[in-house]
Amino acid sequence: MSKLIVTPNLPAVDDVYQWLVDAHVGLSDAESMRLNARLILLLANAIGDPQVIREAIDHATSIRGLESSSPCT
Amino acid sequence: MATQTDIPVWREIGEAPHPGVAGEKATVAIVGGGPVGLAMAIELGSLGHRVLLLNRFDFISAGSKAICFSKRTLDIFDRLGVGDPIVNKGVSWNVGKVFWGASEDPVYHFDILPVKDQKRPGFINIQQYYVEELLFEAASKLSFVDLRFGHNVVAVEPDATGVDLKVETSEGTYEIRADWLIACDGSRSPVRAMLGLEFDGRVFEDNFLIADIKMEGDHPPERKFWFDPPFNPGQSALMHKQPDNVWRLDFQLGWNIDREAEVAPENVEPRVRALLGPGVPFSQEWYSIYTFQCRRMEHFLHGRVMFAGDSAHLVSPFGARGCNGGIADVDNLGWKLNLVLRGEAPESLLQTYDYEAIATADENIQNSTRSTDFMTPKSEASKAFRDAVLELSRDHPFARPFVNSGRLSTAVSYPNSPLNTADVDLWAGGIKPGSPALDAPLGGRWLLEMLGNWFVLLADGWQGPEPEDVDVVDIAFGNSNVDLIRDRYDFSPGSAYLIRPDQYVAARFRKPTLEAITQALQRAQGRQP
Ligand SMILES: Cc1cc2nc3c(=O)[nH]c(=O)nc-3n(C[C@H](O)[C@H](O)[C@H](O)COP(=O)(O)OP(=O)(O)OC[C@H]3O[C@@H](n4cnc5c(N)ncnc54)[C@H](O)[C@@H]3O)c2cc1C
Image 1 (cartoon, each protein chain N blue to C red):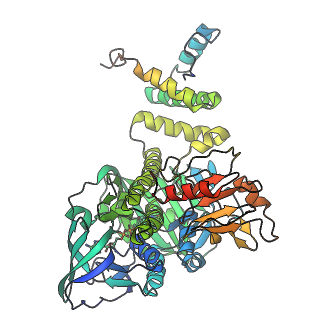
Image 2: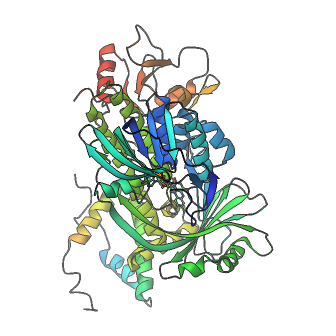
Image 3: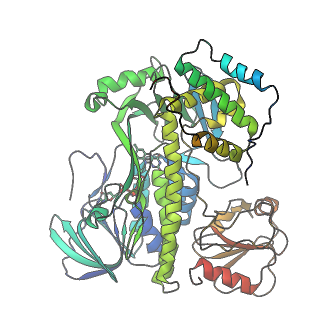
């Protein structure tokens, strides 16, 4: 049974989005990657349910076209 | 077959004489007299089976190999009657500390034995050659065990009812036939190669320097692990106490190095000095460099040939799962082969060795691979996560359990083993079928001392006739305090556990009937589909 909420569930989405983007201002790619890693670990612990995290990874990795949106290609 | 100049000798055993006669027969031939082969010989020999053990070299080698022996291995050594001398020689420890960078405070520390009041500690450290020597001595006392060091197996030809072996000695070769062959011949297993069997897995591109040194002083017997310490920047390091004031220092070196130069004392010693600090006197025991791989055979059972130990599976050393995993194979295979040899179980019982030992190997490989990937991240993203864990762990307790410097070997459970009888009653905890029995004090002794070698019904107040073919251990009998056992096993009056000869739980019942016990026993012996 699916446990990951994939319908709208978060208020103030524009704020949250902006916080995420702003947190990376002035960071190199490597620093950004590390910041994201810290964020993911903090959020994963707050979620506290391995199944939800597993499903989130599955959803995130199932989205195609990641390569084409990369500025490096 | 005798001395090879590049292998350091710990103890000369001497070459066993050539048998002189043709057409010898053995019930069980064991190829390899490392820790796994020797333990296997003790297991089967003390159950009364004729065992022939063939080992290529005529000595026990020195050098740096295993030092960390797990509680589960010590429990098995106890069952084999060799626990005390090994534990008495070893250094007991339970605590591991992990450091990051220059900080003196650990970012993480763990206790490998969170459940106290058990006979054995979480781990002991002892040089592998001591273990081999003590196993050798115990095996040589068994009249059914024929130990032939300096005898090299050069050909094996299995058929449906046994195996023909060709053995080389300095006095010439001879042939011998065995009903069963157990290949405990190490990671490069000549038996595996002679049978043309694969050994798939992963090679890790990294080198580690082991400096075993002698040093006075009383540092606590803890496992210390560093990520990125100032004395080995960008790499990891490990420090461990061994008997005789010997310390193991282990430095990660990376992949592209000059191995010969790195192991030269003039290059090793500055590293050691940097770790120990200035002015600490030490002397060299043995310096070596190792790389590692994680591999396993697809199957450990091939007709009359079985594989155990490093011949069947290889892991990285972080987690101490190599030798400990091999001793678990002995534990699992011993009683099953015993029943088959006695004609009390069908040969198909051995299929469950394949199943259960592979479950153990897979868990060991998975854990040691994860530890290795944490220590040596294989991508930028992987490194970002690793560094994020370490950064967070300083101030955030939640991140500390993520720190992976090796998940140390503990007994593996088989929740889906075909030998288990599934619970029909309600249990709030206790030990599930397929898991190893948990130790506890009992009447001035230890519970695990009363379990093992045969099927035991561990009961809390047994009523009525005793079931056939099992030994009953009744904790309610006598007047010792059994609160702890009751708690650990979630016992209620009249309930009982059926425990296998390897101390694993096969079944448990709140209100056992003779019929239910018999059925569970038959299932655990592979006599019932
Ligand atoms: C640096 C290092 C550190 C380690 N630390 C640990 C640790 O802390 N804890 C742990 O659990 N494990 C550890 N290990 C792993 C451990 O040393 C091995 O898992 C263990 O030695 C395996 O035992 P074995 O009996 O299966 O094989 P081996 O010890 O390799 O023995 C195989 C034997 O078979 C003999 N043989 C081979 N071919 C033939 C033939 N054709 N005929 C007759 N005899 C033959 C060999 O001579 C040898 O004696 C470590 C390993 C290394 C290298």
